[in-house]
Length: 162
Image 1 (cartoon, rainbow, N blue to C red):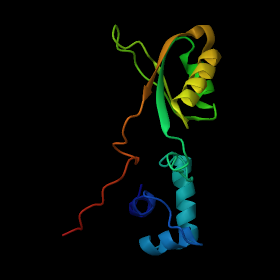
Image 2: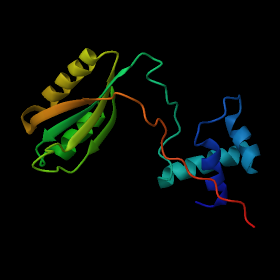
Image 3: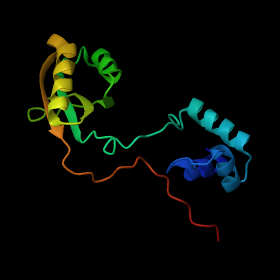
């Protein structure tokens, strides 16, 4: 990233301005025109510097107050394929492969489910269990009890040059 790209990330990491021309507003902040900001955002996305530009709804305010990280003990020979399938399921917001820590932690596939109740999350987990089939040996649901942090990675602003 060059200095302009970093400035664009800093200007947008907490969200785009809610104005009719957000790219122009960001451009005014970083010293570029709106079209240049949009083009740089696209280029950063193509390079993998940023994943996407998207609305991030507050699922709690939408009534999805039951959040369960499901952890699965899935056959290692099947986990890549099944992980891609699980990640594509509507309602799965995060899906990860993680190392096992035997003998105490046999789980290697993690998927976050959201529902309006624990019962809804448990129904989703049962459907997910059926999809995993014979490759799945065990699972657990770890429910959220408190929100400790609700932001992604944030770049720190650099100190001004002396």
